[in-house]
Image (cartoon, rainbow, N blue to C red):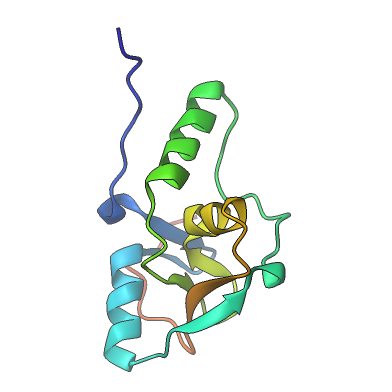
Length: 120
């Protein structure tokens, strides 16, 4: 019998920052509308000490591994206006595991309005 693995789609991906929450689709649409260029970013620039996703249990680790395996490097990662990865950690992991030196990236110069603001 197969062990079920949780699924997550691009539409479920979100970026959280103290001043709001953005859907990944919102960030991509904003970057496209602003015509921000796609550039090759050296992977040695990525802060690997970031806690990008939670892996407290083996099922969480398996879920994240599957997302790394299933992601496509065809799509650029998105950096927020502070240079922090807002979408694309799974693609960064895949690129590093494949031995690549760069990854396609878009750097936002400004942030769109958040999709949601969390109440404190």
